[in-house]
Picture (spheres, one colour):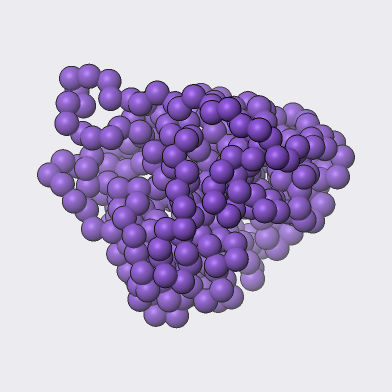
Amino acid sequence: MYNYRIFLLYVFFLFLTACNGFFEKDNTPKPASLVFITPEIKPIRIWSTKAGTGIDDDYLKMGFSITDQAILTTSTNGLVTSIDKKQGLENWQIYAGFPITTAPGIGDDLLVVGGRRGEILALQQGTGRTVWKTNLPSQAFAKPAIQNGIVVIKSIDGYIRALSSKNGNILWTFQQIEPNLILRSASNPLISHHDIIAGFANGNLAKLNLYNGQMVWTEPIAVPQGAFAIQRMIDIDADPILFEHDLYAATYQGKISALDWSTGKTRWSHDISSYTGMVADHDTIFITDAKSHLFAFDANSGLINWRQDKLEARVLTAPAIQGDYVVVGDAQGYLHWLSKRDGHIGAREYIGAMYAAPIVQNGILYALTNSGHLLAYRL
């Protein structure tokens, strides 16, 4: 369908510290052992439930979505599940009829998912009833974004397509040329007002008009370095975020940058390699890097407030904020609560391996494991 070589993003490769000797020995660092802590808080589990079958053995940070009433999940085998937020009971579950490769996008009372062969399925959020289905030329690989009657689909080949939320008809398309070697992951498009922000595997961040796809600006977050394709990978796989009047974006083997929303001009940047994600809170940007270090950047100056490296190589998720704590999950099965002030670890809880970032809404933290277990915690 397209001449892409997809770089399979397995754990043993993501944490290589250098490319020298790659084919001669295993450079994979071992996950850091858990350090002894004296818990200063006790997260309380509200409920736990099964929400589908998860991602099997795939490395897919498919994630989940939350509405006012429900938590919506997808499984790679095609299950779409709605769980009641308060009690953790299943509202409904349907089979999409194809392997799913995206988290569920929500908006306009729709839930939209994408499949391996370009399938796009729109369901009613409340019932799971099919509203429409269409097929695109390439695989959707990011959570669909939905607003103002438009469904934005980001595909693995660098295309952004806008579909009508009424019937799935294509309204416009936009493409950036992607490199041949990419991470098996993708950042989600961000809609704000009348604009779309999208990051690409070539390291570019673009702002598009939501209604016609015209490019407002594009800005390289990183420039490829090195002689080998593997060294030149600068995918934007961490979701860009909007905090106050600025955008924040990060690349693999590149930088984290703060950009002006209107012009795309860079205010500050700092070297980092990240493919997971970030979160903003009280003038601080928290981000996990490819080594599973957690950083706190001053949002205004770009200076590092603190760095926590005691979770190295544990394959951390993107962070979430719960009260006075930054929360991350890891591939070894633990949730970690770290102080927003200085990054020390205040609590941990075993729930099962996870790649999807936890989400906090109204003070409640929700976490989804790779096997499809969904849990809710309060402090």
